[in-house]
Length: 438
Length: 143
Image (cartoon, rainbow over all chains, first blue to last red; front, side, top):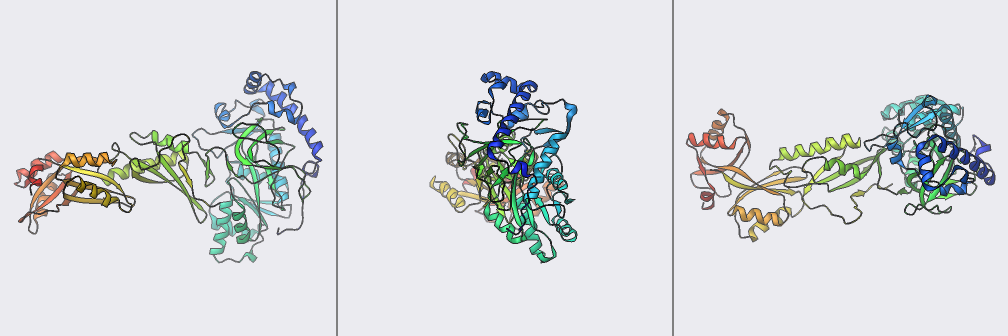
């Protein structure tokens, strides 16, 4: 820990007695369930189907009787089918970085934006931020919640905000130096890239005033944290969020770096067994499931994140009492996050099956060189594709590369391999080799 | 008039070439002509063997991606400018050469070169008309 001062943005909510927090959550849950039952046809239909009435849900413990929600629901009811308020009350749309062909979006009321802002403000404060700080936002601005989320939260705590968005590393660094930036936010891999670039440019860290960074939007590890902290001489802190629930700030880490504090006055977090969907006790590893309990625009109950983690309800050394979630340990599905973009192996298969004559078999290898992730997709050459000239095969390869790029939003190297040389699977296919050392 | 060539897709990996050529020899076949087009990750091996059907079947049975392609076996006078003369004929007729390679075996006063053209049929006619000799599969086999 590089910093000494421990600040808490909203001690009332962040350090509440756990019994009291439970009561607050139960009251807010009751209200939310009633509201979605009355206003969102999907919830009403699903609860009726399970024979659950709003009045059956009295406390947090009754959560288990409610049906789950998942990403496909957001696609099915895209764009406004899950709103619990009239559309005029929506003041903001944000979307997911996911790229499965169909975007997902979430609508926010003015109060939802405020709640989200409050959650990020708590995180910025927990990372040592306040009015005296200069916060550079190197997350992308746009539908993606990273840029605007941190922007709003840092503005709320009174910091001077530098809205750089992502990219153009040398310019980012020049700004950090000349404005005396003390904090910044981006993906962990980009933070590492910034650190390495500063080092490679032969610049002296003494010319910077950096003290901490709020890093999220992709999985990382303690090793990467250590490297970033050494490169930049800062506290590198984890932040978790997802568009469906709010955006970044659903949970944020404090300077003790021992798990992310979940903003429990706004969300109820559960850990469930991803196979049976049975709730698991604190301390057990499982899938994170969130229910929003203050959200007006698009409330979600028991939303499955497919992220694996563990919960710790013990009071933190920083004084906060809300439950902490461990850094994301993996996914329950086969989704990969490559350069901040969600990639599902099924997307690759779809691209291949749409190309006439192409085999659906493939192997995806993900590598990390320095701080950059790269993908190689192996595709078999069969008789229908094989055209006797290099020009013909290269044209085929180019076509796959272009279609992958437009479907995934990422460039991939396409490697042609001999027919039937790739493994065939019975049951669950394992077509992904992730060689990144996180 | 045409000669059947076998084309095989091969990955660039250690031993892939020897494995494939060994298979041809174990089937009792001779390679009469051979060429490889290579790229960073893969290559295309093109060859003419003493028994095309058997060679093709052997490779297919072993799981290779292979195909038969018609090509011309051109009997090119073995003196300076011999090949250039043949190419001029094709150029004058606007016929493009997609690839060519020479034989493993040669025949005294003439070199044997395999041509693949964008217009194979017309190319054959034009060359024949100009007095350039083309060999057929049987003639090649008995060289």
